[in-house]
Image (tube, rainbow, N blue to C red; front, side):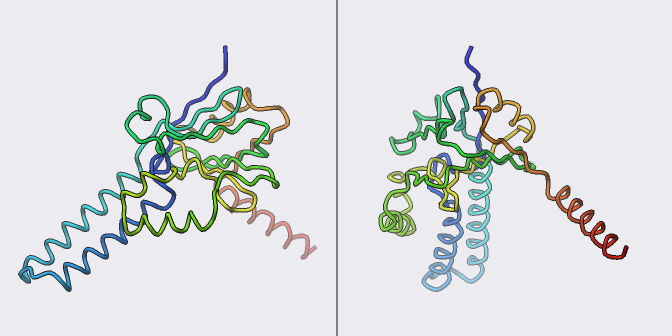
Length: 222
């Protein structure tokens, strides 16, 4: 029987382009400015309108940043990123796009602890170029999305686009799984020579640095 691990992806990256959620406060600011300077509402009504709009904006940001999507699958052949199952039927063709990363395409996997679960960094080899498209088109699409929010329907979800950091990587936040549990789930499927590292928590790293600093001071004093 084939090994499989399916995970729930946190946030909006499985549906919306990367950075889309941070445009929502920008749109709120523009609407608030229009109401403030161009509206003809009574003075007493203006704070109520802006307050209600702010609450709606904050609610939308929280909902999108904490939504769950069935968009991560690891199996013997590699890792699939993108909406799966019934979630795919709710969206357009662009929303349904998936990305398959064979184990041979992956140079390293890093897993970090997060309070919602684990964050996975799938690091590509140094020579990888990814599937990013032309820079000019990506900039034009981002600008168009700012002025025309429904334009996101014609863009790829952020989850299936590699980040431009050096080296290129995919970053996936997963719900309800600890880093060690995820590592144990991936090891049987991944090649033996593929590094799968669990990064310690920041408290552990801080304590280690503090211990090293103390040892160096004792060595210097001796």
